[in-house]
Length: 116
Length: 115
Image 1 (cartoon, rainbow over the protein chains, first blue to last red):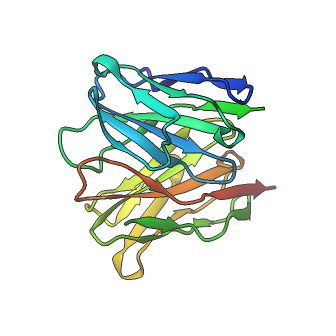
Image 2 (tube, one colour):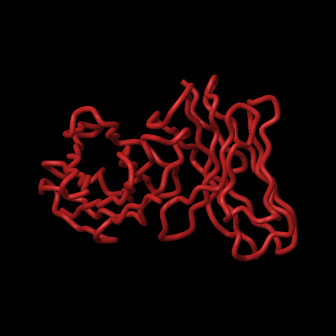
């Protein structure tokens, strides 16, 4: 049983550079989520997709952030012109649901970003 | 808007002692509630969830939680702590009337288990 996988697991980048994270959800999961977690805090919702449609974005997702999910399978999260405040763990999660909420969300192991 | 408050950022118990991690929620609609565990440098693993069925929910690794509407609480317990339980625990809430399971997390409680 393959879980949610994320790549890379760790990324160190210089301020101003662009970075991209990839997430492969559990097969056949139609919903995919991105969360951000900083040290000592709980994860914060960034955005979510149902199939290929991006249905909701948090105000935390500035213009420098863009997420895509072409063909409703894997997803990418790109951060342009990184800032030190972007340093965090970026968590991807997926779930299967036809309607409503309450279904279990499965998380990946996260991608750590350090901006120096 | 929904939120959860986890009382106590750090909890320390002796091995074999009762574990009690507190979570209070705020929601204007019936909530769905979750407990997740996070081990160092790893993602989150679901321990248990409440989705309006039985108010006492049993999860993995011997954990359970009780939904108390009158107290707006969903505390996590385990009768006997094990060293392997040392981790960060997060309570989370989502709306039962929403169209997606967007979770709102608490700030977490770090559980330390001592010999």
